[in-house]
Image (spheres, rainbow, N blue to C red):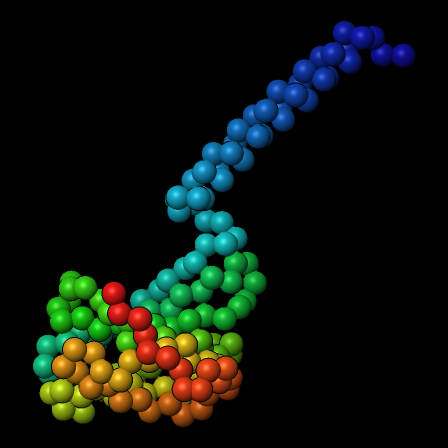
Length: 159
């Protein structure tokens, strides 16, 4: 039968190890809450491309994925601004296909000085789209939409 002092030593080592582990987990959760470390619930945003129109408007295409560890839906957003570093406005947002195809990435072309066209071959679902941003008209050429929960999709909210 083990001695009481040996048992107390093991218990003290277990408690001190648990306290150290709890402290490390607490710091990790705190850093994860403010975005300094990766967590399974972190959203990752990648800029896929940038473009400009002859009239001086700038466009940015980004992809945001909040799926955690497994593969899940990624949303692609198209932002417009009057200058490269100006305030960006969301003009188009959709959920891309899960196949990873580059056909799901938008192509932005200028029709004329006051009109642009956003072309996408296929998307899973359109979340929002804007027909007019300030003085710029926005046309859409979307080949195929798989899911259309909202028909037609609403306008993108402008701040």
